[in-house]
Length: 222
Image (cartoon, rainbow, N blue to C red; front, side, top):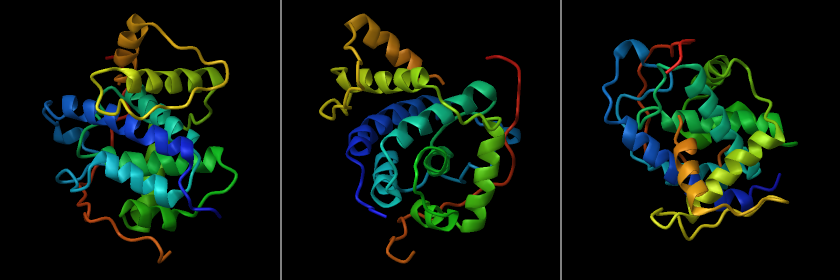
């Protein structure tokens, strides 16, 4: 299998990292109720940045660029389906490696086994298996993404990258076929929408300490 990073993925990673950094920065200000601590939570924020972690995944997981958009869709579905689940600096790394792994299994023709993704993500294989099951239940096993939904998230990432105040501005996400540019007003609107909620692989610098617990499967609206 070719392990060179997908070109689309390389373009999307900085933008996705910027979006998730903003989301985590906002949510880190909220107090964390211990009863809502999940398997994805660490005791402290990992020592690797979201962008570096995503670039590591893009480099070694060799998944398609579409997987990073799907990963965002899946994480957003968890947020929408579980009002008490807050994405922050303590859980975003585990969420990312799990969501990318699942999206690669669901979308790509070729993918690695869980042990490989565990090494890429810096977690034990047994924990990777557990995170996969937890993630699937949190999404209610809803993995199918329509083209319209994919296009919506892809467009929002493009609009975010185009925003003048965005740190990822130089990184342009390529257009989909038939995708149109949007007005400045639509760009502002998209910012709100997207913020909704193997031995050859080196180990990450951080050992991710984990708290125990399960995420709440709440059904009440925000």
